[in-house]
Amino acid sequence: MANDMRQSTVLAIDTSGPVAGCAVLTGGRIAHVVAMNHGLTHSETIMPAVDEALSAAGLACGDVDVFAAVAGPGSFTGVRIGVCTVKGLAHAVGKPCAAVHALEALAMNFYGFDGLCCPILDARRGQVYCAAFDMSGGMPVRALEDAAQPLPDFLARLPEDRRLVFVGDGVPVHGEAVRARLGRRALIAPENLRDLRADAACVLAAARPESWVPAAALRPIYLRAPQAVRERERKMNGQN
Image (cartoon, rainbow, N blue to C red; front, side):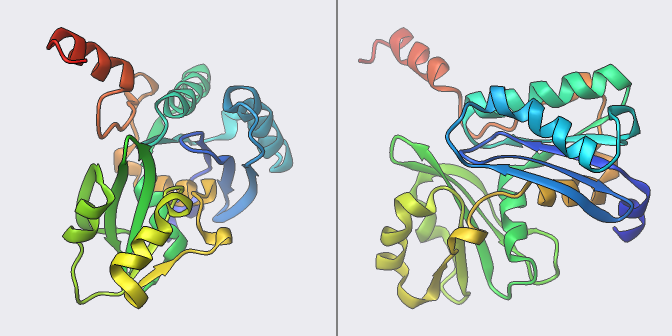
């Protein structure tokens, strides 16, 4: 991973959740990070953040080796904004893209944790986007596959013999329910380690050059169909 990081300049964008972010990795270091959690529209704020990050790092778009998007799961609109922005930037300068998984990027907040990191994103309708990762070796290793399911169903899937830490925008919504079910075995991430960091997306993209794809091939990561599709299917099936 170290060699890839030294050789690659990465611009990463995240608009998949409430906190929008942008970061630049170059020369084996994180040169600039922007995080925005002020409620403004991601489509309006992300390009100024990209301009700020590149300018602060002394770079132009053409200097970037790979453009990374946090491609989901997350807000359907937010994911589309990030993916489309990255595709446009990469296409303009003829560079590849990388799709970074939101749950893996969240797990990076607990690099080296000796239990399982359990990202939970609020999927609404009583569900969470969730998975579990072993972070003891540094990089995320899946212990449970992705799911979009009710929180109690996810908690029932978790092993009973491991420490667990919960991160993500589902924590403010479901943190008390997690504590009630799991007790002291569950650690709840504090505010400064709860949200996805765009610099984590940089590191994951740089570490996996084999996953880079042409701009046209970048796709969102969805764990369930968008709401409009689900509603259309319900109507077609005669459901209210």
